[in-house]
Image (tube, rainbow, N blue to C red; front, side, top):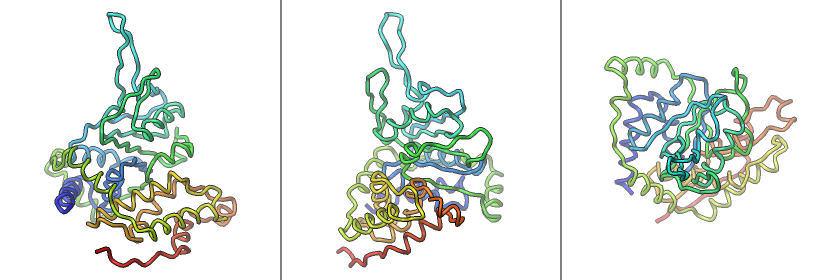
Length: 315
């Protein structure tokens, strides 16, 4: 495990060549990949969302595809289509989704029909065209970017689509020190050109298997279930976390433990990822909106209300 952890550290160092001052975001994206999930990054244009995906693909030797989700993008552009060849046989033409890392740029600018074409792909890891199901390459990760609601030409993703993303993250503006560092880093050319491959697909799959096998004590399972149950009973929420969200929270907690160099989960791992996993799965109630409550405030209140178990260190 120590050798795998060192490989992950090398990936971090490569990505930090191009993404300055956002170590927490980089770590959480890596956690999501290790947990086998998908990432939704909601932010304004120009803060480095696409650059982050490119740096990840280079550092981890992932087959990378990017699609700009404009209103004229069709489902067949994503999943592919069947066509007749010259000899009269049907032939499958792969869509952009047939890769390891798929960047769905500005996903909330395209039609709901095209958005829904991602559902089976993200959940099942398969593509079905004309009744024929084809597996996607492994690993497979979707990083989708979304402009804030209210931007011109955007439409909200349905809850069923949002629930497919393991986490929703926001990069935000860099601080002044990081922005100066970013400018200086461009004096020698595009920083992306300096990103080196330090991990291959085989090593990444091994890491994902190690994360999957991470130990969780029964008390931590109960803690996760209690947190999720609290979202369903809270009068500040009209919609609580789904069972899919419970699984996502568990898997992200395992990945957080792995990133910390442990083969077992502690309550702090759950706390670290709770808001990122749950906020996009919950809806504020009218009472909360009238009281001008924020989702961050409600999620923080749930964490404060549910006591974390005390565990003895695993031998």
